Amino acid sequence: MYRVGEPIRDTKAPEGPIEERWDKRRFSAKLVNPVNKRKLTVIVVGTGLAGGSAAATLGELGYKVKSFCYQDSPRRAHSIAAQGGINAAKNYRGDGDSVYRLFYDTVKGGDYRARESNVYRLAQVSVNIIDQAVAQGVPFAREYGGLLDTRSFGGTQVSRTFYARGQTGQQLLLGAYQALERQVAAGNVEVHTRHEMLELIVSGGRARGVVVRDMVTGEIETHLADAVVLASGGYGNVFYLSTNAKGCNTTAIWRAHKKGAHFGNPCYTQIHPTCIPQSGDHQSKLTLMSESLRNDGRVWVPKRKGDDRAPGDIPEDERDYYLERIYPAFGNLVPRDIASRAAKNVCDEGRGVGPGGLGVYLDFADAIRRMGREAVEKKYGNLFEMYERITGENPYEVPMRIYPAVHYTMGGLWVDYDLQSTIPGLFVVGEANFSDHGANRLGASALMQGLADGYFVLPTTIGDYLAGAGTFGPVEEGDVAEARKAVQDKIDKLLSVNGNRTADSYHRELGRIMWDYCGMERTEESLRKALERIPELREEFWNNVKVPGDPEGLNQALERAGRVADFFELAELMCIDALHRTESCGGHFRAESQDADGEALRDDENFAYVAAWEWTPEGPVLHKEELNYEYVKMTQRSYK
Image (tube, rainbow, N blue to C red):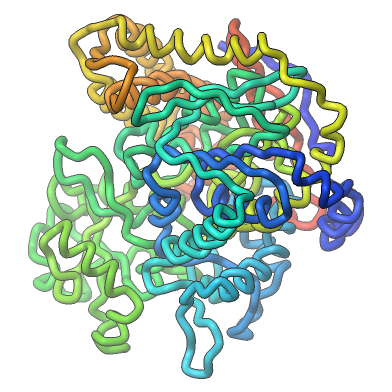
C-alpha cells in the first residue's frame, strides 16, 4: 500500500530562543536589489486572503506578478465565507492574552501535532495583521472607548478574536483586494480571472511556471516565472458535502504533488460543529454558521431520548447543556473537534433534534434576555438573517438547529519554515499548506494564517530564494511541452470516455464513502472498506463518465470532471494516511484509540511526526518529520 522512505527535516527554521527565531531568519535571508526585482516574475495561484495579500505585497516590493483565479473576480475567493473573526494577540482586553498564550493555545488546540517554530511566528505576526487591516480601512467592530472590540472563540479562555460583525472574511478580503488592485493599476500585477491551473512546469528541478486553461475560451496557456506560489485553498470538497464553495478543489496542489511536492498530513480534516443540518439528498453543499455564535448561544439537547416536543415546550430541567456539563472550564467554547464529536455522540444516543435526529440546538434565549435583542442583532444580525432565509425559522424566537460538517483541512503540501515545498521555487501559503495548525485548527485562525503568510512571511522568504535567480538558467522547451501535453491528454481522455454517468454523480458517491468511512470517526475496518471501494469507483469513473461538449469554449462539465478525477486520487491517499496513523489526534479520531471518557488518545511515542507523502508511480512513500517540543509539554488535552 505504501513504503517508508528517508526522514525529512525542516532545515530553514533557526535555532535559539523561540521568540528570536523569526527575526534571525529575516536577517539571514538574502535580499534582492530593487532594480533586480523588476526583472523577476512570480506566479501566484489563488486570490483569497493568502494569495491576494501575497500578490499585492510582492507587487508592492517591485516584483512582476501574475495572479490567477478561476472565479470571475478575485473578490469571489472562498475567504469571504470565514465570517466569525481573526485571532491576534493584541490583549486590548487586558485579560491575560499574549503572543506566548496564543502560541500555546494553538499548539494545544492542534493536539501537539504542529511545529513550535511556525506557530510562534504566526502568533508574533498576528499583531501586525490587525494594524495592516485597520490601515486599509477594514471596519472592525469597536468598543465605546474606541478600541477594537474582540470576542472569544473555541479553545481559548481569553478574548482575542477581532471581527467585523459576521462578515470578517469578506471585509479582510476587500482590504487585500484593494491592495491588489492598486498594484494592478501600477502595472506590477497582472490578474488572470477565469483561468484554472492544470499543471506545474518543473524545469531544472525548479518550479518555473504553470499551465492553465482559459475557462471561457478553452485555450491552454503557458505562463513562465522565476517562482510559483500556490494559494489555492483546501480540499474539503473531497467529501462532496462540505461548507466549502462548490468550486473549491484540490487540483492545483494535487498536480504539484504528482510533480514532486510532498503532501503533509492529508488525513487531518476539520469537522465544524456549527453548520445547518443537511435537509435532503438534493443538496450540493452545506452552510456554515459562524463559530462566533457559540460565544453567546448555548448548545443543548433534550435529556430524554426521542423527545420530539418543540424546544419551547421542554422545561429547563429536562434539557442537557452537554458541553457545559462535560467541559465546565470551557463550556460551549471547546475546540471544534471536541464540540463536533460531542454533538455526534448525543445524536447517536437518540437525543438529536430535527429531521432524522441529526441536529442539536444552539439557543440564544439567555443572551437575548441578558443583552437585549438589539445588542444580539448588532453582533450576529446577518448570520441570523442567513439562517432564517435557509431554514424558514426565526432564531430570535426558536433555537437554531446545527450539526457538524466538513469545513477545513489542516493537511496540505509540505513546506519548510520558508513556506517552500520539496520542489525548489514552489511556495505554498494559506490553507494549501500544512504548516501551522497540527491536527485541529482553532476558530478564527484561518484568516490569521492566510494574511500572515501573504503579507509578512512569504515576501521575506521568497526573496531569499529569488536572490539566486541568476543561476536558474532558461526554462527547457521540452519541460514546457511535456506539461502542456499532460494537460491536453487528460482533457482528451475525459472527453473521449462518453459514458452515461455525470462527474457530479461520481463525486457524490465518493463523498459518501469518505464521510461514512473516513469522516468524523475512522476505524481500521472502515478505512480498509474505503480503500477497496475508492479504486473500484475510480476505475468505473474513467470507463463510464459522461463529459458533454468540447474543449473549446465554456465547458463546466469538463472542469468538474477534471477536479473529481483528482479528488479520487487524493481520497485514496487520505485513507492511507488515516489508516497508518493508529492514534487519535485532533480532527483525526480513530475509534480504537480513545480514553475512558471517549476523548482522543494520542500516541506520542510512535506518531509525534508530520507524515510527508511522496507520490511515485508504484505508490506513496512516507517521509517522517519528527516533531520536537522545547516550549510546550505534550500532555493529554483537557478542556474540563
